[in-house]
Amino acid sequence: MIKVFLVEDHPLIIEGIKSMLAEDTTICCSGICNTGDALMQLLKQQQPDVILMDINLPDINGLELCKMVKQQYPQVFVIGLTVNNQPGIIKKMIDNGASGYVLKDAFKNEVIDAIKAAANGQVFYSHSAASAMRKPDNILPSLTRREKEILELIGDGLINQQIADKLFLDVTTVDTHRKNMLAKYKVRNTAALIKLAINERLI
Amino acid sequence: MIKVFLVEDHPLIIEGIKSMLAEDTTICCSGICNTGDALMQLLKQQQPDVILMDINLPDINGLELCKMVKQQYPQVFVIGLTVNNQPGIIKKMIDNGASGYVLKDAFKNEVIDAIKAAANGQVFYSHSAASAMRKPDNILPSLTRREKEILELIGDGLINQQIADKLFLDVTTVDTHRKNMLAKYKVRNTAALIKLAINERLI
DNA sequence: AAATAATTCCCCTTTTTAAGGGAAGTTGCT
DNA sequence: AGCAACTTCCCTTAAAAAGGGGAATTATTT
Image (cartoon, rainbow over all chains, first blue to last red; front, top):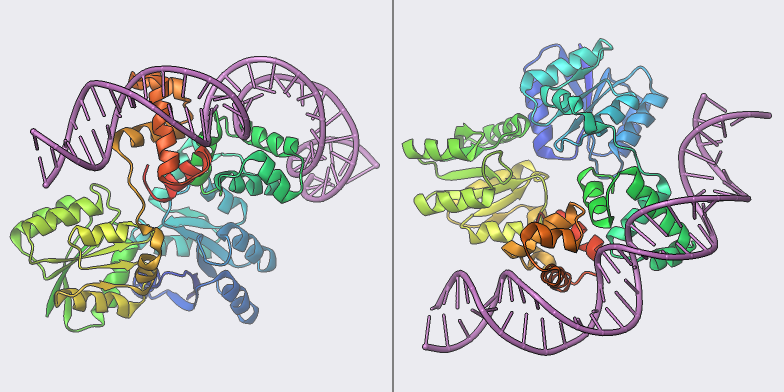
């Protein structure tokens, strides 16, 4: 019997997963939480074989949560779950110790297959996740803390001087970060940078 | 007995809805399609009392589909369904004849309540949809054809001169449109404009 | 402890955008 | 036919970003 925890904040998805898993007698879903925090509390009491985890949770980023779980409970296998097919995030989840990735357009058997594979220590991707992986553009550089901070303020419409004032920095520093981001993502200007950052969920 | 059709392309959500509706004996889900096209075909043969319709379908925009359904089958009630809480889109759905709107973070009873309300000709919003409606900023001005065209090119990183060349316009014209958009949305610069446009799904 | 990455600050010049106007032709709709 | 909204073009000046460098200090990771 494979013991599964589900971390998901959308009741509809919870129902869907529960309903799918109910059809397989070798899997039992013994814990459901809707936040990362609730999961960490639950794990203190008992550990499942597999955690099925939504990447977009209200309280914590899925990548962080996955890393935390694997650090404290390395024997527990984690499977990522998400609606939005974010190129690049799949690879990052695997880097953070995940045993698989299932997009929400996955079919019934794919969820079950992923859980079974994970329980055996294998890695599984749903069909759509695998095809997303094959795209070469999934190796986007990530933003540093500071860059992300600055990029968010840029997106809010602040100019370099205002950002500098807000973060107690020199204007030239803000400008340097801005230029580094343009170079990092090989975009021509701020407009393209913001578009890319939002579409890739970097901010 | 309320006859319901479900238009949804994510198997997980389909399972969730089916599972929720199974618990209510006065509702029967007698048709499931995963595209707008499939729905229109199905409607030629039989009409349900209520259609539960995902706004983000692979083949057609939910707003358009809702309008089409209501034009051809005015007696059928339509309920919108979506993960992404897009401020403004709810109002547009209602304008297009929808009888309700349910976000995917809705609870079990909210989906059932929405269906029952719709079957009685009433309008129902899920808790989260209603709170999204209350926000005054759901009446954002829309972009004109030209503005949208130009904004997309701005987002691609083109500068005014390049946009002008591409659309066979004068640079000043492109600049005027850019200024109008900044004024229209009361934003300070292009970065904020792009962010707003993407978040509001204007481009 | 060494190497790498991140953060910070500075110089310069050129290009592009923003903000303030005005004006006129075109399209669409009632 | 008339009005409103859209589209088009023009002017000027100031401000901001882009592009090209360099360099020193702190974290972080190996």
